[in-house]
Image (cartoon, rainbow, N blue to C red):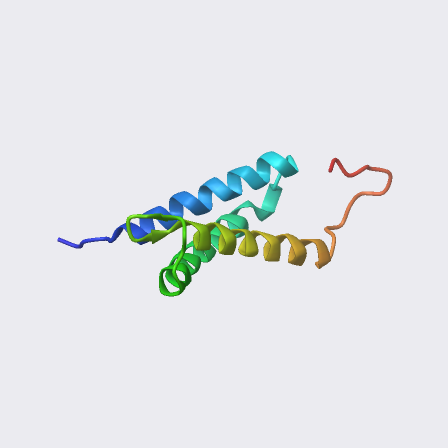
Length: 99
């Protein structure tokens, strides 16, 4: 049977929680949501690995929470900046954007 360590599972939980907070603060994510989730989960996993090597002051067992949260937000901010700088989808003339 395949064993999964706690780090990937906790990274998914931390990443989803951070995306939920981002969407709560922003109001909507629309088509960015899958990219936000992916970036936050990968950032949380990388942050956990980095935090465990550097010595994270906030830990749950062997999981470095502070590093995971910080790098999850870095991933969210990267997706937010790239989506803002990217081309705007074609809109019909006379229609307002609902953001």
